[in-house]
Length: 175
Image 1 (cartoon, rainbow, N blue to C red):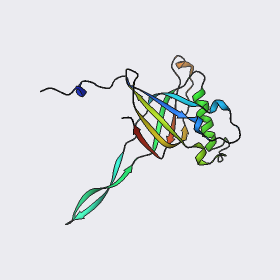
Image 2 (cartoon, one colour):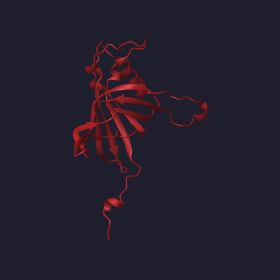
Image 3 (cartoon, one colour):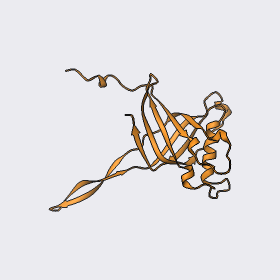
Image 4 (cartoon, helix red, strand yellow):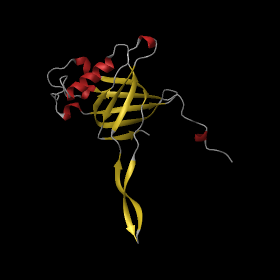
């Protein structure tokens, strides 16, 4: 019995690049132009959110039978872990995006939701550096900027950071 080629061709050494198009933000008040560009994040860890289909119980002769409700359920939250670049541009840009939603004093930001919601893309790249497919998180906004551990004991390691996004829905394109 022969096995299909997919049984031998396993994904190894894949990479994931997150692209956030900050240039599509509608910023009021003449913001710094260096903020308005697409920023790439070298991800080292993230999970594609789980999807489930809702169900309802249909009862027939006293026996419950689950049937699909044709609704898509998901958490709509995703945590990205990435390695900071040496100029800290990614963190600076995330912080500015965060500040559009909530000011430093904890109050509401100055922009409306349509000004800070973005469609962000994770590009899946094979071990041969070829694009495989994109995961697009539509209507995303930043919810959490995680702590950054700065420690002289670990001075040779890359500095990593995490942030959490909330989104309306996601699609998989070019699969």
